[in-house]
Structures are given as C-alpha cells and as structure tokens.
Length: 252
Length: 252
Image 1 (cartoon, helix red, strand yellow):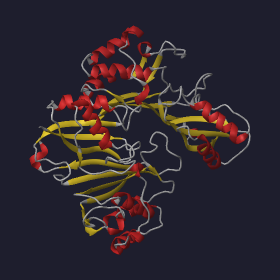
Image 2: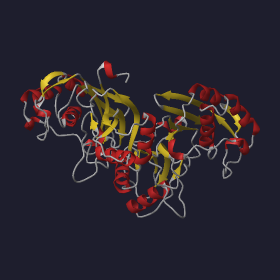
Image 3: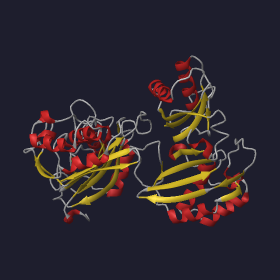
Image 4: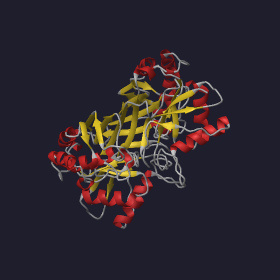
C-alpha cells in the first residue's frame, strides 16, 4: 500500500480549519472524501500541522496511504478534478518511504502573516490580508520580534485550547519587513503552539501603531501569562507556507 | 464646484467592466450612484480608461465634479463606507485643478498581466490570474515582446469593437519576467486599443509554449490583420496598474 506525500494549497475562508469536524467543512474532510470517491475507500489524511478557520495554506504537507496504487500524476489529477468547487489544490504529489509521517517527521514549519497597512478597505485581497489603517512602524515591530527568537516559554502567546504538552518552543526566526503598503511577518520554528503566530502578530501590531514599545513584547513574553497578551490577529492574513523534512525524505 | 481626482482599486469579477451599462453592474455606475447617495445628485465620473468585464484595477484614475464641497478625506471615507459590498475602494482622493481630465490629460497607462504557470488549478487566486499548465519559455516570450515596442499599426491586436480613431499606437515598453511559477507581462503606453493587451498576451503564451516562434509575433504584427491573431487571453490576469499625468498635475 503506497504512501503518498501531498503538497496542498487552499483558501481557508470556507473551512472551519484543516482538521475534520463533526459540524462544518474542513480541508482534511474534503480531501479524504474525495479520495474516497476515487478509490472506493475513505482513508485518513495526516497533515503536517492544523490550521484554524480562515487560515490559508500555500504549502501544507500531508501523507496518505492508498490501497489502490496509482501514479502520483494520476492521483493528483484525479484529486484536482474532483475537489472542485472547493478552493483546494494539490500542487505536488509523490510516493514516499512508508516511514515518512507528515506530522511526526516534520522538522520545520514556516508561516507568513500579511498586514495591509492602508486606510482604504480591501477589494482584491479581502479575507486574505489583515488591514490596519494606522501607519505601522515596521522597524519597531522588527525590534520587538527579535525578543521572541530562540527557546522560550510562550505561555503568553498560547491559546487556552492548545493541546501541546509544553509551552516551551524554539522560534528559529521571526522577521518583519515592509513592501510598499504591506507589512509581512515571517515565522519559522520546528513547531508552534495553537494561536501562537496570531497572538504574536496582534502584539506586533500594537508595537507598530505605538501602543506598545518594543520592550513591552519582552515583558509580555516574560510574564508567561495569557492576560499579558494584547490580542489575536484575525486569521485572514495568515498563510502556512511550507513544512520541511529531514534530508532522507527530500528526494522521495 | 471642486474637481476631485480619485485613485480606485477594484476586483473586476462582478462587473461588466468600468463603463456604465444599461443592463448589468459596472464600476462607474457603482461609484456614481454612491456619490448620488452622498451628495443628493448623481454626477458623471470620468475614468482614465475603460476596463473590460473581469479586468481588475490597482490604480484606475478618475475625476468628478461635486456640487457639495467636502474635504477629500471626508469624500473618500464616505465613498468607501457606502461602496460596500462592491469590491471597489478609493485608495487616494485629492482636489485637482479644473483643467485636469482623467482621460484627456492622461499621458501614460500601465497594465500588468499575471500568468500562473502550473498544472494545479487555482485556489487563492482564482479569477485573478490566468493559469497555463504547459511550461512557458519566458525568454522566448520576452524576445517576441520586443518586436512590439515602439510605434506600430496594431490592427492585428485590436478588437473589432475598438472605437479608437487609428490602429497606430506607441508601445513604450513591454516586458516579460518570471517570478517562481508566475510569468508577468508589463505593458506601458500613452494609450491602448481595445483588447490590445489581452490579444498580445494570448500570442505571447503561444510563443511561450512553443506553438509560435518569437519571429511569428513580428509576422503577426506586420500582417495588420485580425485573422493573424492567436487568441485573446482571458480577463482574469489583467490589472490596470496606474495612469500618469503631466508634471503640472502631479502635486495636485
């Protein structure tokens, strides 16, 4: 029974998130049910990470075992044809070693958060960016972000619903840059807590508009207290960009 | 009666185009009717150029005279609040000299066409890019595009419905570049013929996928015959980027 590795792009707006839910559409269920139509058997699709309702993906990675062997090309073509009208696309599909696990083998996850810093409301990018009208100081935001890089107890930036065993995580990199009227937050880590990036981005926005100083981010981190949080950024601007795996899986 | 210059962004999908139509929604009508709600009088809004059904704008420019004087800030705020749910936003508003005319003063127009060169269908950018599955040779496309720069008779690339007096136009620049799996065509000219960019982009795609040689673009231009056209690219990937005006209007 071959194992397939899927790279998946989706628009998160119509979904309750990645994970299958009893009540409401999810990306996982859409793919699993479509695989059921193709193979006659609904398999479990394992994602590298869950995304919340409204959060998008450019390169979510998942694996699935399929009883009926097909070439990766045929499988991705069949999935893309039948996933309509869901805004989900399989952008890459390959057969992988059976030891590969999209979640447990994953050694790095990369997210991007796009803030549109302008007064006018959004048109072409509605639901896919977070608009902030007040001018943001991206240099101050970058200074604040630097306090979070490294291994820390991220309790302040963790959802009360987070199921991770420990609030201690290693932020490999966290950068803030401006491109015209877009301010982009990029985060990389082996793994993240639930709501971590949205919580951090909410606080970065408070630094950007002057309500917080960059050092307030350090104080919030040190507080290790959810009450020290500014607020969560909305899901609109958040993109799961990529998942990385050990070299042994790179060419499979 | 002050004259206002508006810079307008819109998602072209729900509209029959920029221009007011007897049957169906248009960007011009949406803005005019909204101004009517604000001022009690429906004025005429003059655009720098028409865009077709499904064509988007990042920086369409228009002017309008309004009987009830308002600050540009108040006018754009009122427009943006009331234009909902239309995907139209006023991204800049200023008072201009009464000699300024969005169409007749305009000395340069800039468009961008975004091709997504991949096999998987689109999700986040559905309706806002043209997907081409076959690998495109952007260097060959750039070579073909170079044949069109300068002053030429563009009859081949002109819609039968074009109302321009002459098919002779000056293409100031026409470039093709690749950014990962996006191939972007950028066109600048004092003015364009109806369907000119979509006709040119359709031919560039034929060069990109190998059906045409770059020299076939020159032959098509020289034919001065609509029958020599490959085909029109769809509106999805086309963006009106900006309109430029003589220096005397730059700071108004």
